[in-house]
Image 1 (cartoon, rainbow, N blue to C red):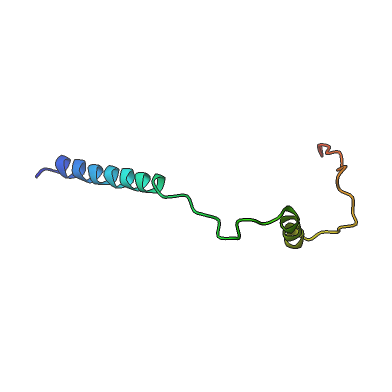
Image 2 (cartoon, rainbow, N blue to C red):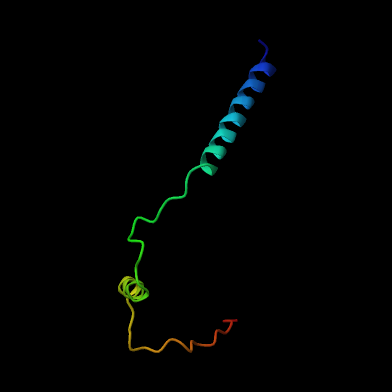
Length: 70
């Protein structure tokens, strides 16, 4: 065997490995959310507020104008 044949075989193995990995990743079934399926909107809101914290008395709905600092 000459060196060009060995290099060609190595490239073929790498390409087939990558193609197989891509097909395997695309064919994986979608993962189901592991939490309870029926969580109410209020429970979700409470969980988010507990996670992110913050001051519940501060009104942030209006926001603040963003200006460039230049």
